[in-house]
Amino acid sequence: MRKQLLLVLILSLMLAVTACGTSGGGGGSEADGDETVTFQATILEINEGYYLVEPVEGSTELNSADRITVPVTNMNPSPEPEAGDVLEIEYDGSIAESYPAQITNVYSISVVE
Image (cartoon, rainbow, N blue to C red; front, side):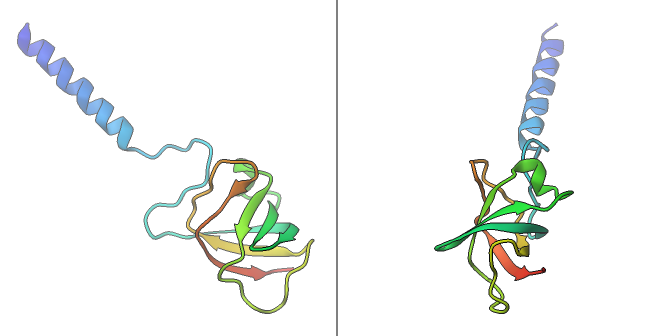
């Protein structure tokens, strides 16, 4: 009887540890390791130090948030973006769940349209 109880406890502990160690698909875009994620978004506002953007239709990021702030870092210098332009943003895959949502680790930003 003790062996069975011990076996059940060990299996329960292993299940709990395994469940806590997996990354779920709940509520945000996320990349593993050194992967990068790229998406397109329309500039809604240009503020000092960041853009407020809206992901384009069909974008995975649109499932996380309809408004995202993106810091103006690693921006290709030409052409100068304006409100209404479409940007291509490459980042680490992490989106902070606030409103508006936030991307902090940007690898590159370029104007598409």
